[in-house]
Every structure is written in structure tokens, then in C-alpha cells.
Length: 59
Image (cartoon, rainbow, N blue to C red):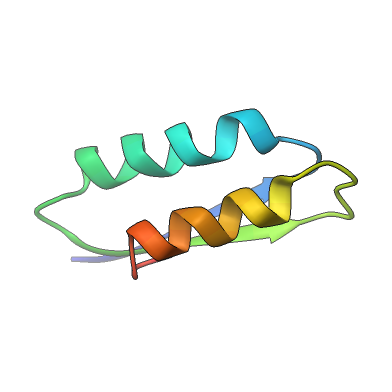
């Protein structure tokens, strides 16, 4: 089964990396993608998304 997890976020820097890691752990045996949608964050949310992508190419 193919799955795409879409996560809208605005100023969620502190939660994005743990969220991505948790999703990856639960879906480890699945074919999946994680898609973050940044809605104009003014904190470091975008940087957190990039860090998550460095750790997991499915993001």
C-alpha cells in the first residue's frame, strides 16, 4: 500500500522532527511519503522540515 501523510504546519518548529520520526517508525514497513505544508511560519519550522528531510529521504 502506498501512503502520503500530509502535515500542515505553522510555527511548529519544536514538534515537526519528533512527529516525522514517529510517523517513520510506525510506517517503517510501508511505502510512504511525508509532505509538510508550511503555512507562513515565522519560527524555524522550515529549517526543522529540512533537517527531517536530511534524516529521511521520504520527506
